[in-house]
Length: 402
Ligand SMILES: *Cc1c(COP(=O)(O)O)cnc(C)c1O
Image 1 (cartoon, rainbow, N blue to C red):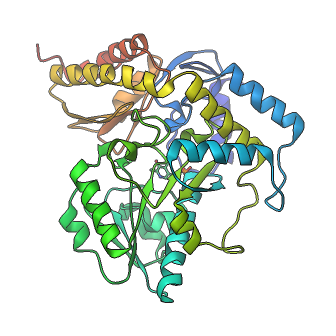
Image 2: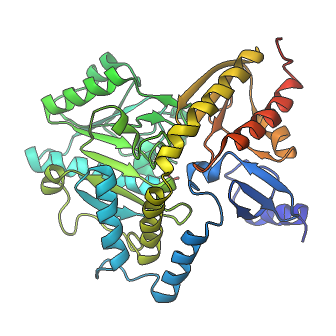
């Protein structure tokens, strides 16, 4: 079948929950993807900040193939070596004390919410605790994660959600303070908002929120699902700020394509929250997924991925700034490391479609923002190529100023 026939078939069989781009992807190699007709694309999406190491990495693939031949799944009734080893490595890179493996970002946030509520419950026995989350946040599509997602449009049709959630403005400490009550059990935020438009937390904001949490014994939860795993030039974005969460969640690039996530906590929270029987998942922490985590963490170290991000990200920033200065329709560049956005004065879907036509994969974050979350192995040459294709697409509607 050709691409068009596959797409027609898909539109008959799959639920219409995504506005998909009209290509059928078939294989990948490094920074490039190929569709089922053999057309090559430069990829600045990485499966939404997932494929940090690029596609078809031989060492990663071999580790997974070997594990498939040994053992794929065991259940959590038993221990398995990849889960034990990957938990140890994840603790080392995060500085957290205890790990619970999940299958996705949303599921990690569900676990974090349960841990925070249980912690508060064990302190005072009440069942009316509140969580403060941020406007324009994104935490996933399941009922609990949706309840703390700061976008009313995503939530409305699915109410009632878990309830007792208050929304504060990101980067506005007074707004957070005004949401605090004697029932607040946790403050949840993304250190760099992803879907909400590539907005980094301001350092003074994070420091004040952390101090507030310490003062009132409120748990600080960071959602590092998108901004974590080296993308900002630190393994976890909060490590830039000199603050530390009580609970953090991670997923997306954690398994570089194998579905896996985790929530992690400090010993203090672990000792005072979830107990045996309180939480579980059939697949979470299975040997195949944890082999992916273990190998990803090994390769990050061996290939100096974070150092590479620090080296190459300023160049991406510079090229995006220059592009912005040349085109009046681009209002702002923002983001951190290899998690960047260009804010346009108009919807960007047409630009993204044109880029795809010219062999460049880019995604949006909201209707007016183009998001840049390439594999972390991206080089200056890839960035130059991306800018040149993107500019040719922007120019059609929005000529150069010079
Ligand atoms: C993608 C994302 C999620 C949801 O992850 P899923 O794996 O799609 O459930 C949660 N939080 C943030 C910040 C994300 O970017």
